[in-house]
Image (cartoon, rainbow, N blue to C red; front, top):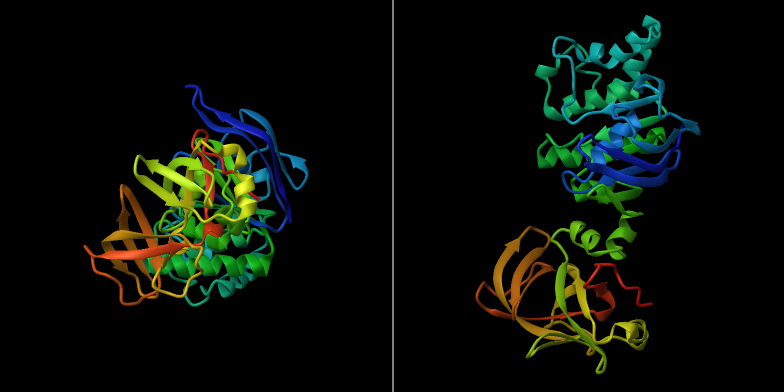
Length: 370
């Protein structure tokens, strides 16, 4: 196995556009790490630099302790799985799986052994004589994975490999990739714009925006303790609710959102102390949809409550998304299925003050309050 280390790696194109601005981090040997961010954020460029498909403008890239900046892709001991599968349509599944090994000059018996082992691991042993055009999208993706697998590389690089699959197949293949990683224990770097893939697959995730790394942490920590407004708003479905206003101390803290619009926050003493330096300043409060509850239930008395107008109710089976409006604020609640008000009616909701996130309204950084 091999770890990957980047030290101030930059990519600047001839027109001056900075695609990656000084990436410094380490992918531990055997780790599955996910690069995630919106289109154009630099995640695929970063992956292609690791693969050797893009030149590095400056900085140092090491794989398994060896600097590889000037090495061609074939000398880096990596295998890449692409978004479009890149299978040879005139070859059988077995021939596609073994093609890279054939190019390396491996013995026919060894190729057959590795192909059979990969096919059995990925459930392809019954279609080895089929051609890609005879396979489903999920089977084709398995062939692409298997072709990388048989090479036994130090590092797997996966560039949005599931984006061409339907929702059900994406879920199935996510599980497949997670199982494969647990079984092999190989270093994997996975690129996606899909936050669900990032949160469910990655042992750690790297969040990028405009070529800049915003945060690197476990999915849970990134979700619960985002470093800034971008990370908070990018991760989470439905998106986090944002309330903007001026913070005032007293009575558990108050957010002044207009001349006659005040939201009591019900903060404890420790949080109030943590916000002392921000009294009288503009803040953005973040509240995840699951933090909003129906006030009709048995909730602690200190939880703030307000009455909102229901606009849209979206049942999704095990839960319900409720789009509502309180004053000028559009809010989303994630609630358990129950007898909910219909659009146009009012609903009293409450929230746990401990679940509030605080951000500086100027630079968007999260404020540590405890």
